[in-house]
Image (cartoon, rainbow, N blue to C red):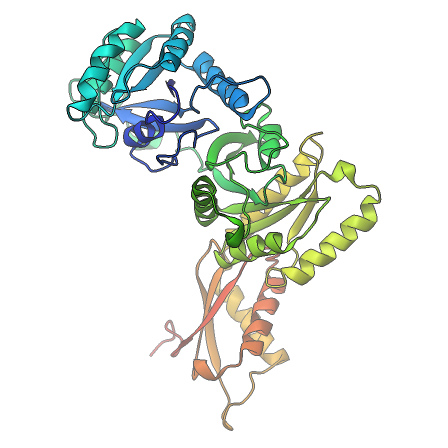
Length: 460
């Protein structure tokens, strides 16, 4: 494990993105944008190494946000096998660099000194000044432009005591008879993790919930709203099922978002919804279902993601049964397009209701992936048509001849019929609801569309 550390605005997240080949970490000229630790994997010379992007190290009073960020960085250093200490070559060595370089040395971990932003003449003096930190010869790079990354990779391998493979590529050694064995004897590939995004308004308890599920203080928490900025992924195993949890920034109405950092964080949260499989909409039980909660819920269903509603801070509610009935009624009325959404009452702080939440996530994911055999679909269609025939249009009957499911995630169905454009939306809604009930598809969006034409599988 390699931890990337340094003071704010030296380019740690830019280097993380460069090494991982992604845009996972938020990048901006705004200092202190990163707050939580972010994990990623880099492929150097065919060897996968785990990277940790950390918050900028700052002097701060105890208990402040900056102090909590610093503790997260110190935890990353403690867990790491190697520390990449990054400075800004254009700014030169600052007092903060000197102070925090002492922390890196005292950790007892190997340290590679990285002088970032070293492109051009302005960076030369800063690279020379970096020798004064006592961390060895600095590696001059430009993370933004990709300069010096090869030299950095070589030094990382040397610091970890690894040898650079001759081929520089991963792959089977053809001279190794064990590696060249029959494919049937190889272990099966591990199952893909379920991608779960935790979303909601600011201060609903998203980071506290992620920490409770992980069993460690992985995310910065506190009474201040808007602490989380990056959408940070964390791995979790629940009863043998691999889960990839995404803690996201709180989403407010666009009109209320004015700061650059919040705009970037909100965009990252929306992107997490788009790429998630199951989205947990976290509601504050003391202020349930404000307009923004419903807006987020509609966005999730429009993206076709599976939805679970979690009511947090449930331990603070006095009349629990009555409150739960009212909340479920609100969910049913406000998210009518996805009937029977799972609603789970939890308390992230006291860690109650977490098993029920995880069970709901796994069950909803299975429903979201469900595929219905074509023969069963067409038997259902025949029964649905016999119960309620399509209305006539311009004195002519509309015939639906065939239905199939081309894809899952979410369950997507296509019916073939004549004059598809003449079938009213109310009848399509009837078919969708009948389909949901017949094949037990609660709480997930269903896409049902019509195509003009005959049964494509019918014999000519």
